[in-house]
Length: 207
Image (cartoon, rainbow, N blue to C red; front, side):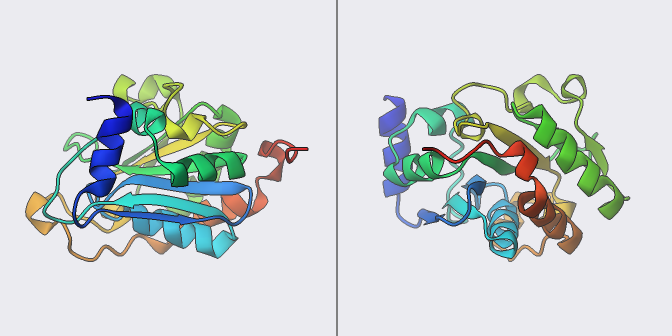
């Protein structure tokens, strides 16, 4: 099955939602929504608070279909393609759960200047979390630097934020999938602040 076919099959699966709202040139992504609980909530709330654009794929609680980021980036989604063409930079919101890193927020992605801004804003807002923006301190498979990862497709690239369960309002239990998630408001406000004020990291608009 090709990447196009895999993405198309996921989007066609009963209960899967594809959401897209085009606003400002800054964008928020959450294409593992539902699978990584609360990530789509964080992305959507931050986008709305800052007037940014928003794209998400949200799975129902009965589905556990993880497509790697580079597959999503190479797949055929007209809505994602339109989103990527519209924005200049993005923050992709992901979730992970590792018992040895219960409070680590991992800030990857190819736009390292934006990553530094994200880390600088989140650290004082979330003193109970450890914000890691040194790529060497992030597990290799979670660095978000693959060229076909959607976070790196806009002209200015972007930042991949990997969130442990607590800060995104989720739990460690698969059984709790589908339960409402209430992310830490300081996380949402911090990401919205970056989107609203990071104009130095946004390339000039297309001519």
